[in-house]
Image (tube, rainbow, N blue to C red):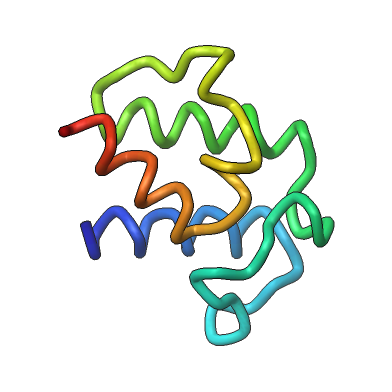
Length: 80
């Protein structure tokens, strides 16, 4: 999962003003304004392509997507 974590971090930093060394894994992405709803679409595409699965509308929540840690936990739950 560390490779996936790195891809998430790279994606977020490329889309935003945040530097990689300033982005904590538990930093709130949406509720702090780091990424917005348009970025979410690209983030979902990244997650789906990496996990080779579809994210359903019911899975699109702050609980699953508001930090790198939450995205990793969400992705791990899909493999359980």
